[in-house]
Image (cartoon, rainbow, N blue to C red; front, side, top):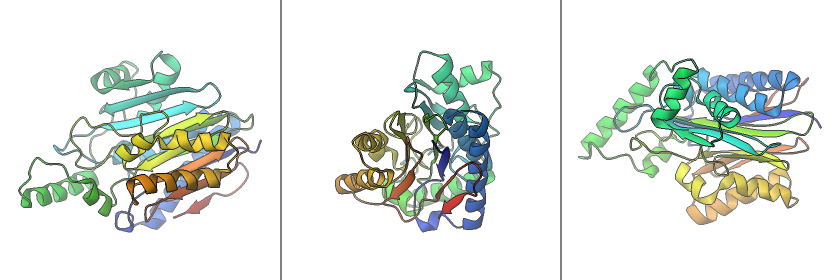
Length: 304
C-alpha cells in the first residue's frame, strides 16, 4: 500500500472563499501534519492530526473558526471512524473543546458509545482536561452581526437564514480528511461549526457515521455541504459502498454527487474519497471545494 492523506476545506460559493493563497497554505500544512502522523502511526492518527490542524487554523468553519448560531452561540460537531475496526466516535453540539475531533476519537476508543452530545460531551472534555475553546473569533462575530442585521431588516429577528441564503454566502464549509496507511487501514474524520445562523441545538451531518464520514476495509469518505441533504442521502456510506462494488474513487465520488444533485438540486455537497489502494478523488456540485492530497516523500497536490 502507498499511504495517502487527503483533506478538504469545505464546499460553497466563490463569494465565501476569497483568500485562496491562505487556504492553499493551510491545506498544505494540514496535509503535512497528516503525513507526519501516518509515517509513524495509523490512518486514524493521520486524519485526526489533519483535522485538528484545520480546527486550529481559524480560517475554516471548524474549531476556533466556527461560525455562530442565530442567538450568537457556538456549537460544534465532529466525527471520526477507523475503517479497520469499523468503530466510530462523534460529538454533537459541543461548546467546550478547542478540538472536537480529539474528543470524538476519545468517544470512539474509550467509551462504548458512538455519539455524545451537548453538556455531557462538554463535561467529559473538562474531566479529561482537554484544551478549552477560546470563544468566537472576531471574524465569526463580525459575520454574525452582519447577518443578524440583515434578518432584522427583513422583520424576522429570531428566524434563521434560509439554506438558499447560506449557500449564496458560501457558508457551508466543513473540514474533513481521509487516509490510507501502509497496512491498508483506512480512516475518515470531519469537524464543523455548522451552518451560520442555524437554530440553537441544530446538529448536522458531521457526527453521523455514513452521512458526513465513513470508513471500512474498502475505503473512506468525508463530505461537506448542507448537512440536512447529506444526512438524508447518507452520502459517505453511499460512496464507500460504490468502492465495494468495484467503482474507482473518481467514479464513486461523482456517482454519489450526481445522485444527490438529481434528488436535491445543486450547490449542496462535496466529497473526498479514498480506496484501500490509496487512490483518491473528489467531486462537488458547488462552485468551490478546496481539497488536496499528499503521500510520504512527495509534495502536496492542492485543488482550489
